Length: 265
Image 1 (tube, rainbow, N blue to C red):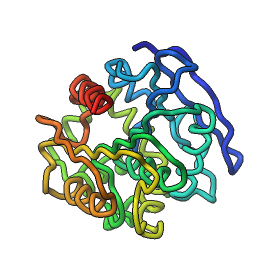
Image 2: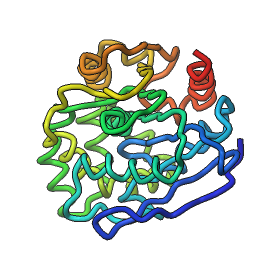
Image 3: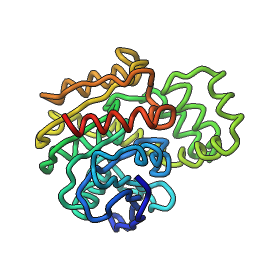
């Protein structure tokens, strides 16, 4: 499936978001919500693999080029309201898919309105990465984006120093990570200060939760996944073999094929 449209949508707080559309622009389909340290462009290969829906719309959340700023009133509820604007624009959406922080946003959105199917890949919820907030705040104040990338990979994701150094060798990739780290502190702070939900996806007709094989039962993503699962009932759980948290980058075709299968279940 190839990209066919890019659309700008006005949202609250004097900001805006853009969305990338694939397939048939006017056909109800799948809406994708990326998480922290990700943007719509990073999901192009997954969107290109998905063919179970006639269209795929990937949200470029605020704080990312070419979307607008977070604004001073930013919160987790801001993200839910922004997603509501997308769903109002693309009426008849058949499925909502979110990754990581985007997974939580998708599940919360399904508390507010009926959604036929919600799919979430390793959604996170509070407390998540809370111990890294002071260091992230300091790095943001100094506009030290290299340090922000190091913090998210070492202190939050738990990757090795060698992994971070390997990331640095890809100059273009590292530049992208630096750019995406701009809203990182505000997003992680919003995640950890939002009121804990009593339940998630209350109005979803069907919920599918995906965990990468490498993260099953391990911190931080597997343990946060288990916490989210306790707030969603009933939900079907699926494991993506050979993948961790970054399946959209390391296994986009495999993730796309799994989404196709879930559409048929």
